Amino acid sequence: MLTKRRNSLIGFIVLAVGLVGFCALLLLKSETQRRETRFSEYVQNISGIVRNQLDTNEAVLAGFSAFLQAVDQSDTEAAARYAAAVLSAYPHIYMLEAARAVPVAEQAAFEALLQRTWRADFQLKDFPSLAGQPGHPQVYLKETWPVLFMYPSLPESSSIYGVRLETVGHLSYALALTRHHQKPVVSPVFSMFEGDNAYILMQSVTRPSQAREQVRPNFFGSTMMSLLLVKTGALLEAVNDANIDPLVRIDAILKTASGTQSPVFSTPPLQAGVLDRFFLPRLADRVEIRNNSQPMTLVFERQLRFTDVLTDEMLIILTLLGGVLICMPVVLVRHFKAIERADLEHQRSAYLATHDVLTQLPNRYLFADRFDQAWSNWQENGVQFAVLLIDMDHFKDINDRYGHEAGDQVLRAVASRMLQATRSCDTVARYGGDEFVILLSSLTPHESAQLLAARVFESIAQTVVTSAGELSISCSIGVSLCPEHGQTLDTLLKAADQAMYGVKQVGRSGVAMTEPATH
Image 1 (cartoon, rainbow, N blue to C red):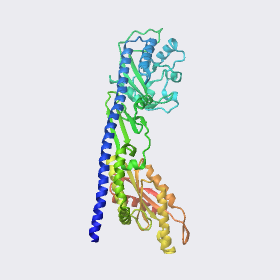
Image 2 (image 1 turned 60 degrees about the horizontal axis):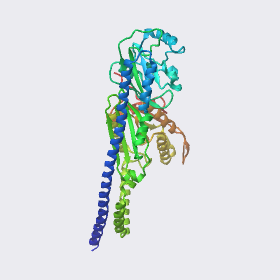
Image 3 (image 1 turned 30 degrees about the vertical axis):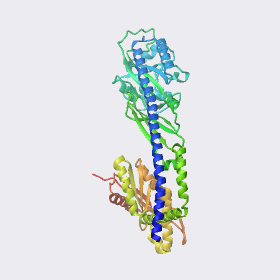
Image 4 (image 1 turned 90 degrees about the horizontal axis):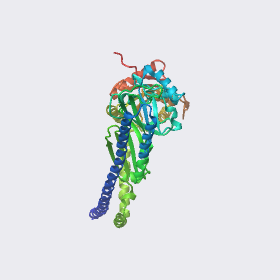
C-alpha cells in the first residue's frame, strides 16, 4: 500500500512538473523563435548600413582618383572645391588627401621648389620624428611619398603636410601593396595625430607625364596616391542611429591589406542578469561583408531576458500551473533535499577521488587530466605550457626530529603558499610524499615559466609556524617546457626531475630549467 501511494504521488508530481515544463517550453520556444526572427532582421539591417558605408567609401575614392588624373599639377583650389562637394554629400568621410611620388634622388630639388613656389617653411618629414614615436620598419621603395593635399585643411593637422607616407608605420605596407595593385588598399585602424581612431583607404593614380613649370608648385605629378580618411566613430554613429535594440552587442573587425584583424568599433550592451544568462539562450550571428577593399566582419550578440519572453499569456498559464504545485510543498521539499544530499555525497566522493586529503590539492590523477587538457590546447592552438617539479629540502629531517604532525603542518603551509603564488589557470598538485607538481598553462614567452617558478620558490622559502616552533624550509624546483623538453607527462616530469636533481647536486634550494637537448 505504501509503495502504491508513493508511486501515485511520484506519478502526480511528474505529471504536474511535466505539464508546467511542457507549457513553459512551448511558450519559451515560441517567444524565442519570434525573437530570433527579429534579431535576424536587425542583423540584416545593420549589415546593410555598414555595407552601404563601405561601398560609398570605394565610390568616393574612385571618383577622387579620377579627378586627380585630370586636375592640373598645381590646381589645389579645384581639388579643394571637389573635396568640399564630396564631404558635404558624405559627412561620414573625415578627410581627402593626396600624396605624390618623388624620386629619392630628386627630394632636395623638390623640397626647394615647393619652398620657392608654395611655402617657405615646407619640409619633407618622417612621421616618427613628428609624432615623437620610435621608428617603424618600412618597406623600401624607390621613391618617397609626401602628403601635399588635404581637405579640410585643419589647423591641428597642418603639420602633416610633407610627411612621407612610407614612414608611417600603419601605412608603409599598404603603400607598397598599392603600388602593385590598381584596386584600393586599406590600412589598419590607428590613432590619428590629432586624436580619434580612423583607417585610410588608398589607391594608386597614374597619368601621362606633364612638362614641369618651375614657377608653379608641382602638387600632382604623374604618379600619385589618393587617400580617403574615415573615422571609425562615423561608422559607429551610423550604426547607433539605426540601433533600435540597445541590448545587442556589435563588434566590427576590419581585415587589413596585410591580412591582420583590426578592431573598428564595439557597442557595449546593457548587462543581463545571472538568471537570464543561465536559463535563456544567447542569440549570435556573424556577417562577413566581402567588400573589395574593406572586408569587414560584424559579430552580433544578444542575451535574451525574462522580460523578453515572459508575456502576459505565459504568466497567466504559469500562475495556474504553479497553483497545482503549491498543493504538494512538503513532498517537493523532501524530494529535492534527497537529491541535494545525494549530489553532495557524489561531489564528496568525486572530490576524495581526485584530491589529496592532507593538503586538499589535486592528486596525480586529476593532475594527469589537467595535463591532457593543456596538451590538447597546445596541439590545437600552439599554446605552450610548463611542468614544475618541487621537492622539499631535508623534509625527512623535519619528520624525524619534530614528528609527523609538524611535517603535515609544513606540507599544508607549502600547499597554501603555492596556490597563492600561482595563477588561477595553473594546477598545483601533490604528487606524493614531499613532492609537488605544478602545471603552468598558457605560457608566452618561455621566460615566464622561470619567473613563475622563482615566485613559487620565494613563497615557499619562508619560515613556517608549527606546533614544534618556527621552522625554516626551502625547496628545489625543476622546470620543463612543452614541446622543447617533451610532449608526454612522463617525459616532462623526467626532464623536470633531472633539472631538480641538478639543483640538489649544487646544494639544494634553487630553481633550474631543463637544459636543451644537444644534437
